[in-house]
Length: 364
Length: 126
Image (cartoon, rainbow over all chains, first blue to last red; front, side):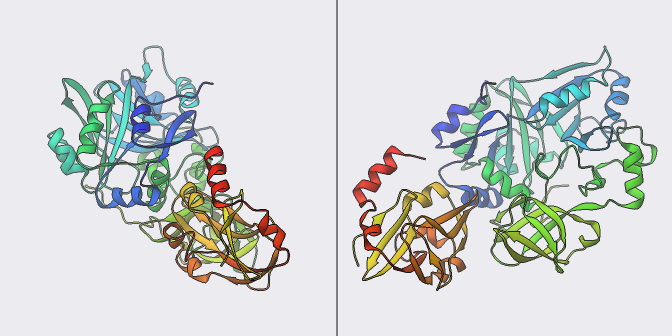
């Protein structure tokens, strides 16, 4: 398959981006400033991220569309108000997570933001439940820009009046350059911010404006350190088809009503796990020293029994220490439990830690 | 101190009598990005030419640091283990990695000069 590029590829190049292949796309991993500076400028000012590789999947249909989607998505879509968003998943028959996603109710149906690496398969999986009168479209004419950081609201409000009124996990249509664009107050960094769905034709103009307001371009490298500090999962690392939402410590993302009534893929299994708990569970991990416990690092109990593995690990620039997430046997998941991390054949001490590592500042 | 010599794996070496000082080059730090973890060897450890001797990690990934020269470690630079970011600021000065007592000076002589190394980096940008 040919490597794909987002509409901003040349723009990134001119900004000095270093590219890496990611989910079939050539994406910036970092720009001239480097990961730590990009991370800090997002936390202290604002940064923009080109996340146009993610799928913007639009669905239209009557009431039966909700029934169809609720078979594979455990959110309460019936009671989701127009312009409100939820974090949820696509689930397989075993309750395993096919993808994690953000679903927003639109005037005519729903918009689902899908992970780039999963989007083709996701659409196949969703389509199994759709009826003939349900229309769907993966819109590749749209870019998706995340604007994140404490100054985001002030900067975007000057360009697109009204965005400041949005609450976290809600969105609205706005007009910009004689075109419609859709803005949600959301993101994946633990900061206040927005995700802006905008036509490929107008996206450069938007970025020109952001850069003129000292918003820095942020690559996938800092996106990873930011989301990990915020305790957020990365699909393909912290989540996969063999992990269910209870194990992933994401049962909060299954709607209360759906937990009781079910009617979605894997419910029997999940219902049982909700009552009895799962054998393993996702936890936050803080190594004691400076050592970085990266993905696949083995986790041992203080008495040297293997109890799990790391799924994401890096240095957290805002925490100013290494941070990690992983899965351990549930009886070792209590906050403060001493563990050992095997790095390059040596065991280093660490502790099960609260998530997030970095406190969020969403506008509710 | 002798002139600095360079390896293809982006380490530098300087020689003072039979004690060599080894670090990673500025070019290496630019490729690595922000350095956030360093592990240096303890005194007494024997290292082989091109054998793994230390570890450096950036926000992106972990990399081994090899000794361009064989010998016995006399000192690891604890200061860089305490402040890994200092490797980005002064890689070819205060932020050396380790010192070792060498066995065979010809290993040092066979390394690249500054000009040869610069040319090597240009021809091998990654």
